[in-house]
Image (cartoon, rainbow, N blue to C red; front, top):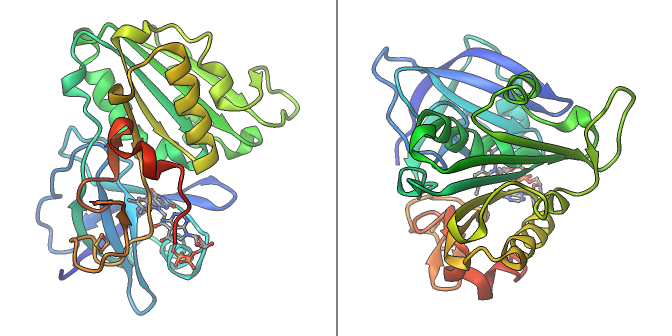
Amino acid sequence: MVPRAFTVRERRRETADTWTLTLEPADGGPVPSFRPGQFNMLYAFGVGEVPISISGDPAGGGPLEHTVRAVGAVSAAICRAEPGAQLGVRGPFGSSWPVPEATGRHVVIVAGGLGLAPLRPALLEALALRERLAGLVLLCGGRPPAELLFRSELARLGDDPRLELGLTVDSAAPGWHGHVGVVPRLIGDAGFDPARAVAFVVGPEVMMRFTVDALLDRGVDPADVHVSVERNMKCAVTQCGRCQLGPAFACREGPVIAYDGIAPFFRGREV
Ligand SMILES: Cc1cc2nc3c(=O)[nH]c(=O)nc-3n(C[C@H](O)[C@H](O)[C@H](O)COP(=O)(O)OP(=O)(O)OC[C@H]3O[C@@H](n4cnc5c(N)ncnc54)[C@H](O)[C@@H]3O)c2cc1C
Ligand code: FES
């Protein structure tokens, strides 16, 4: 439960309200290993602690990366942290995207807005294991193009023969040549075999519901659709009950959960 001090090495602006922070242990020790989809509790000293997914490369060896949207007191304090400042880190916690288990299958990654942050480690791992996969599809949606995360990385991936990339925005801006419309609409034409597909979905709850429906309509098995349930959390270690989702704790069984296991609770409102 005790946070470890990390120093901000770099702070990179992604969108108007979202920053990626690169963090290193203040004691010079190693960065803990993590699985794609896991999260840390980040503590802005004197302000508070919130769960934030790890957005960096799980291959290890590098610093810790988190991509944070400033929506309230704690997330805004984290986003303001300049290089040299310290943050507390507890974790990593939670379940992960089953990338190694997808050998021989089509991996379909669907992200809405900030949802690309927790999916980026899964994408990097899928690219590293690409030769073992039957296919790799990345579908991303933002509202305007300026709200798409990791834009220079997405531009590079557009030319990468190892994956099929689909980008869409709700409202186009000058210079935008991609799709216009919501991200679930890209699923119908995406190049994957539903019988051999495993899908990972993160985004606003309404986007996730429509995306799951589109995947199931196309014939993907509900057990092969994995979503991230980002319920509010306090302790991250099953002690406070804040994150309960029916019989499951989102901080232990989640945040990554197969849709067939939570279908009855997925469409309920959070209390
Ligand atoms: C497992 C997990 C992973 C997360 N990963 C990221 C991430 O990678 N990047 C990121 O920016 N945020 C992430 N979040 C959300 C982040 O934890 C919240 O934005 C943060 O807790 C808000 O705290 P605050 O004090 O800044 O704002 P508050 O004042 O607590 O809240 C501001 C607004 O955000 C809403 N809110 C707060 N927490 C959540 C939540 N968990 N889900 C939906 N709405 C919420 C509140 O209802 C309120 O409307 C994640 C949450 C979880 C549970
Ligand atoms: S966050 Fe406390 S029980 Fe899950």
